[in-house]
Amino acid sequence: MNLYPAFGLLLVDDEPSFLRSLSITLERSGGINHLHRCQDSREVMDILARENIGLVTLDLTMPHLSGEELLRRIVEEHPDVGVIVISGLNQVATAVECIKHGAFDYFVKTDEQDRLIEGIKRAIRLQELRQENLELRRRFLNDTLERPEAFADSITDDKAMRSVFQYLESVAPSGQPLLIGGESGVGKELIARAAHALSGRRGPLVCVNAAGLDDNVFADTLFGHQRGAFTGADQARAGMIEQAADGTLFLDEIGDLSPASQVKLLRLLQEGEYYPLGSDRPKRMRARIVVATHHDLDARQREGTFRKDLYYRLRTHQVQIPPLRRRKGDIPLLLDHFLAEAADDLGKSRPTYPPELPVLLANYDFPGNVRELRAMAYDAMSVHRSRTLSMEVFKRAIDPTQAHPAPADNSPVEGAVFTPDAPLPTLHEVADLLVREAMRRAEGNQSIASRLLGISQPALSKRLKKMRGTGLEPL
Image (tube, rainbow, N blue to C red; front, side, top):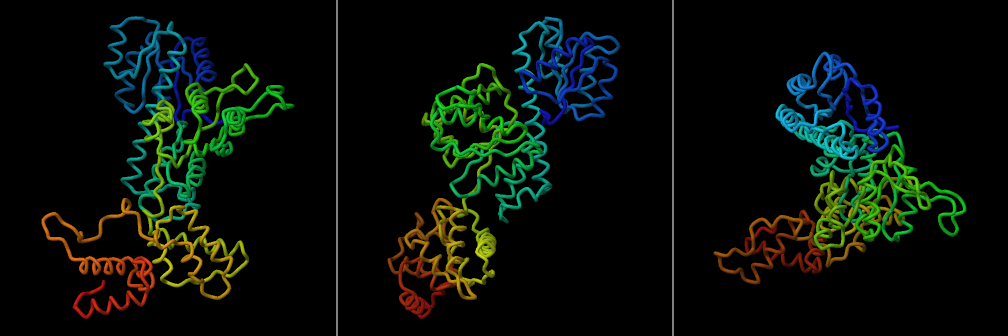
């Protein structure tokens, strides 16, 4: 069984019965099982020096060292450790003094248990976020990846992707949900697999595509059912949550969930419990939830098509995977990888390809992202016969009318064509500017530049000669 939270929770009280009762309640009602118990207040500082403790619950009235003295020492010597005071004294003045001295919260032992458990959960979440922020800052400042092998399947040399990897290393041990955003085909499932590998969880990664699941199928898929729960339920079946115990449950295309299914997921995240269909006994969720979507959930919750409370539950940790058109430096790496992969699968020797092929691909939008490039590479390898790979498959796949990079994803052309305080250029001048820009993007390749401009290569060659004749440099 995985320990939650990643850091230890130290329970300090001189009453053994209260320690035992609180431990059982935390495990059963909160899923909190990374617990240390201490009855002798003189041992607390030694435990803090020896163990990885992130949070302490502290009684005030104890022999030897009082809770107030311990609170001051913990705040002074271990300022990164949170302290919650749980006392039999129901006095506002005492609570105020404890908060002034650095306690995170104050509870009376006679308070409702649910309120106490929620307070401890809240303190754990804040401690997790604090530790993750410190770890994230350290990784960014050092520009390091401690587990690069976890990202071996994500072929990239892009700085933005490296930042995503560093963030994942920081938040992967957390038990809070992770939201992965990005267009279709960018590799969101690879990121989910990396997050699971980094989490250290001993259980499996279980993947569920939520798109197209109606409410009943969604509930049965996640929660499972008891025998006789509905017509045809001849035997009990464990749901995906139970199958992912001590591991990760990955819900893909979460943005397509119906409103009713959104409510079910929200309750699961809030309560940490679920009921298999046909059962009146709840089960504890022991899986970490990772979700992915190609939709803009922020826009959807503002439109009212996605629950705002669920959105904020899911986005505790979130990453956005950039589309391929924003990391075109990865195209040669991915092309080499997919061609080699396809050659191995098809039993062919790995081919060489014309040097202008990466240039051609760099001037394409790739609406299908990495998945589309992979399909192109496999298609090209399936018809490959000679030593050098033909570019014809790639040219057919690229619609010339879509060959220009999306304006929103690229910086303006160096030297803007239109400026408010200058006269408009003539049509002839604009045509020359277009030719120069096409040649720049095609890295001097006239065949590719002519495709970008939508003209024949002889027509482009004729215009280039005319430009040189007038003293204009095409590049």
